Image (cartoon, rainbow, N blue to C red):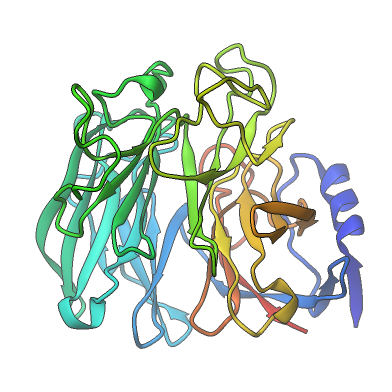
Length: 379
C-alpha cells in the first residue's frame, strides 16, 4: 500500500499551486496524525458545481448543481438525466441552486427544501418546500422569500436543527452594512417553523423594527452549518473579507452560533473583540474559504467521532477540528491540494464521509471528471 501522510499532501498542494487537481494515485492510503487511515473513492463524476447533499430513506443520494438541477445517485450510480430542474433559478458567480434538505419526518410527508437565488437577476433568494414522490417534485410552497441576494455573498444553508426548526444562513449580499440592520434578512441566521411561520420563542419576536425570523446577526457569508452531537451547539463556517472590503487578508471563521447573539460583521472581523459582539472560535488568515460544515457521528471512523469537518475552496483542502465541547483541541489539514476546491461535506447513512469538488465554478481549474462527489472510506 502507498501511504501519504497529511504533511506530504500539504506539501504537494503547495508545489502544484493553481494546477488542475489530479487526485490520489489508485489505492493510495492517507494517514492522519492520530493514525486514522482512509482511501478516497469516487462516487460520481461529470457534475457542475455540486453544492448540497441529502439522502433518501433508501440510501439514494440527492445532489444540487448550481445551474438549477437536482441530480440523483441511485444504488451508487449517477442517473444521466436530472431528477428536477428549478424553473426560476438564477445562477451567477457564487449563487444559483444551493442547499437541499429533507424534512425530519420525510418518510411521512415527503417534504424537501431547496434554497436558491431566483430570476430577479439573482438579487433575491428563497427557500421553497416541495413534495417529492414517485421521482417528481410537486406542490411548491415558499417558506421564506425576498432574502437579499447578489452574485456573491449569498450564504445559504437551510437545515433542520435538533429542535425541529429550520435554520437558514444568509449572506450580506455584498452590502456589508446589512449584517447589523435588524429590518433585513441579509447577514443573519434565520429560524423558522417547517411551514415558514415564525417560532414565538425567537429572540427578536418582540423587538420593534426587527424581523422576527432573525436568530443571530452580524454575519458576512456563512455557508456551513452543523450541530455538535451531545451538546446540540450549532457551529457555522463563514467567509471573511479577504481584502474585498479593505479589511485585510483572510478572516474566515468558525463560530458557535447561539440565539440572539451578534457575530460582529462588519464592525469587527478577524480576531477583533468588542463588547456585545462574538469573536470567532477559529479564524483563518490567509483565507481558506470554508464552504461547508459537518460533525462526524458514526462508527466507520471511531477516532473521528465528534470531530468537525469542513471543505475549503480557496485553500483546496478539508480541515478537521478535534473538539472537547467548546474547546478546540487541535486541527489537521486533509487532502491538501489534491482534489482542488472542496465545497460540501456530509456524513452518509453508510457512515462514510462524502465531499464534493467545485472546480467548474469559474475560480478553479478542472480536471477530467470534474466536478466530482467523493467519499472517505476506512483502509
